[in-house]
Amino acid sequence: MTLPYGLPASAAFVAATCCLALVWRAALVLLDVRAIRRTYPLAGAYRIGRGWTGPDLLTAQRRRALAGSVAAAALLPAVVLPSPRWTAVLALLGCFAAGACILRDRSPRYTEVCLLVVLAALAIRHAGVLASGRPPTALVGAFASFFAAQMYLVAGIRKLRSPHFMSGGVLLDNIAYNAWQASAGSRDFLPVPSLPRLAVLLDAPVFRTTCHAAAVATATVEITLGLGAAGLLPAAVTLLLAVPTHLAFTAISPRRIVPFSAAALGLLLLALPHPLLAAWRW
Image (tube, rainbow, N blue to C red):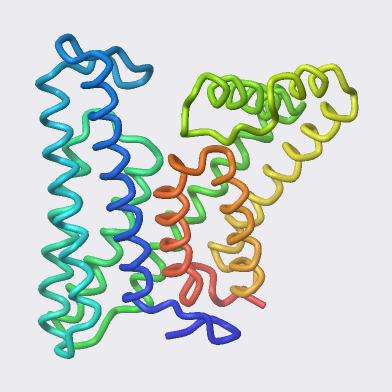
């Protein structure tokens, strides 16, 4: 199964992106645990959106992260074994184990939800292989198409309905926040622009205009990707638009957004060959 121009969309390729997301996410958790233990060795720390992170919770997070890495490792041998049934068995075990680790997170976010959907789509595919010897590509495509379209359309519509975002204020705030965090030593953000340059930019009308234009473009692209995931646009156009878009998202925080971008692209790759509205695709 390939996309236009010979681009691969096999389960093996999607499983590889899923593995990347799982391993990267686990590495981030381990780095967070290490940083908190160094800074607050006894009491833990309070994190926005996560609440109080004490020693016991750190240990539980570390165990889940390691378990998620093992589950991801179980997916990789599955894509190179010659027997389809053994491949399906290993992939199913890896999907269920990784999903269980994610579900135990008390506050899942976009990355975790997207990973769960990709894992569910892979599980449906390999369960079909075990049951009939053939992957239910149309069913998997429709499943992935529904959730991918919902993800992009909801994100784009919410941005369109937010005056603060459409004015460019959210992007401006994020740029300022990231610059301050980078200047304070955080490695999660790019040190661009520098604080002296940021002070000049914030007072420049052209910078605010650029943020406004970028906000409008972001909302438009996300809605377009949602329509493409549903099957209303050519698969090649959707994919060629998705890759640079997610690369641009990754620039906001290279270390943190990679798992989400990898999972989202994997979900899109599953959706494009057999979208929900394939009959209307050009």
